Amino acid sequence: MLRRVLALSAVFSILESAAFQTTMGRLWRVGTKPGTIIAAERCFSEIQNPNGVSSGCLLIAPEHEYNHFLMEQVVLMYDEQAGTSRGVILERPTAFTMDEMVPGFDEFDSNLMFTGGEDGGKSVVMIHAEGDLEGARPIGSGLFVGGVAAAREAIARGANQATDFKFFFNHVAWTDRDIEGMLDGGGWRAVRVPEESLADIALQNAETGLWNALSRSLDKGRTSF
Image (cartoon, rainbow, N blue to C red):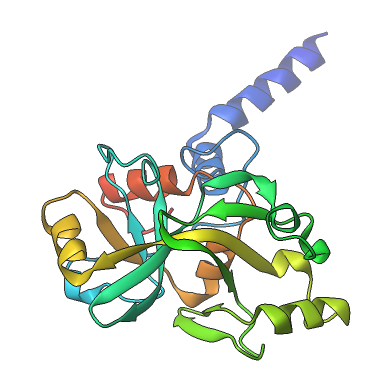
């Protein structure tokens, strides 16, 4: 009995130790649902100047954001032209898979369709990290948009898995002036994540608590989450 008590005491000492708490803090993403584990902290750099916002960066909604689609969300910017930038909301899944929304795309029966935004006129955006696909266009930081036909062919011949691709219904569209107002007075923040981390963050086929993780890290002045 004494041996068992001593063993339990040793376990509790480890659980309460500062070293153990620090290690677990790095393994468990801040603010995520129980069970969401990441392998290591990811670094990012905050973009202070609205002119620094470009394709491949992330925009983080403020806590007081009133737009239903954008509440507690992170937007990946993927296109910029003629004074207008486009992005997709990363973690607002619908109740449907890609093949349910687009009949005939049976190879994507496990890919959730995400709500990318309110703009786009019922369009579908495909984001991935496969730069060799025909029709794929780079958006920065190791990610690409488009190339759906080539993606389907790659899956058919076993070169890729369906989970290598993420689909969004519609997108958000903001002018340069919109983004300037969002960052300068609207409470939005922008960050850039290194190429080695962004694909893993952006292509998750589920909600991972990304907004909580980034927001809390920014609030605490940290450069990793």
